[in-house]
Length: 493
Ligand code: SF4
Image (cartoon, rainbow, N blue to C red; front, side):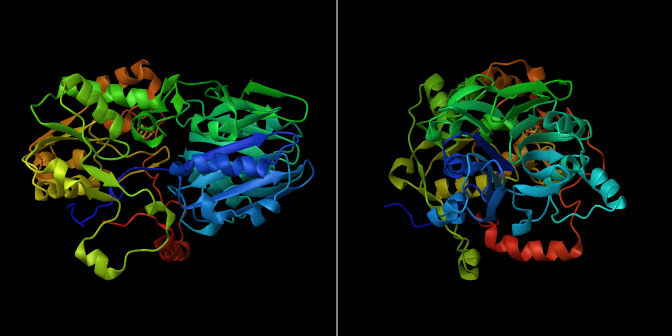
């Protein structure tokens, strides 16, 4: 019998900031299409979500805390008529987890309403905001996306491309942005292309998405990437792509390939599932070990474990089962459950584990707290040996481009040697994929990736004072603490 003890494997994971989606489809219900697009992008943000639509004259919007399926009902979608829409799923890395920070963000401008949805992190948002506040601008939210919306709102030109181009010249950092006006949708991407952004075609119209996985559910087909520094604009007459700012060195986030993006998405022309299998294959070559079975930490460790198994010849076997439904509740564990150390989401298959030498494949180690719990659980279930293999290089530096990870002092690989981490998590052996192994698995040159959290080489310079809560006042911070307690879907360590 499997034990009742369960773990939450996501409590110690890196968290993606946001997913964005946009559609321009004459004759279609854009809010409904966006709902299903956001549903496919739910993994990119689970704190809040929103949809803004236009019927060609007026923009309407609904947003709230919660998952897409919790925030939108048939009744709410019926209040959002129109053939153009943008949508957003959010996990906060800048700004508190409160309803007013949910996106899209809306502004009234001299030339009409404008609504913005943003994935990424501006490293000069604080600076821009201070300048604008000094000029009398009042901000309603504490997120950096409002800075983009307000900058667009200040533009006096009626040419949307020109307005976006002017704004892009002021922004520094990672941004993939969708924009809705009463008559257009537009999308633009930072000159390094840190966060993904793709375009698809849909029955007489166009869609834009963070990932291609949102295309299949809405019957859209992949058309191409929005290249770094580019602006895509769609109106009643045409769809076109223009250069917004000069592209710089490409720096797509390597963690999109390793873990964040859905495995069925395609990035840089590579199906991520296959790239992750190849990461497992490289890992088997770099860190071979004699064992009985290869066990993934579900779900993201599965393709890597299959790759490891294929190259090593050691059979793949499930040893941990993940609950599929935990993300669908806002109910928090009570204090007694916390004190008992009970975690949700992972249950061990004791029959597959007992007496075996295991190779445990996972995609990353951040603080090492969860890996330690999983290793302990496997030994408690009778594993003879647990060899941990990670399909990412050691994370030694924090991210400033839209991924919520621990501060440098909390990152296991920043403060400990590999041997110390092995000892800390109680594994028999520990091996990480090398940077060349990760790059080779995706199949593009090393200089086309951001690898900063692995090697400290930041493609966009980061000022010293940049940090997550740069906009937080004591008042909003206190409010955020209370509200995020209800909204946070993981159980904290
Ligand atoms: S620092 Fe790491 S997580 Fe952040 S964008 Fe670069 S590769 Fe991605």
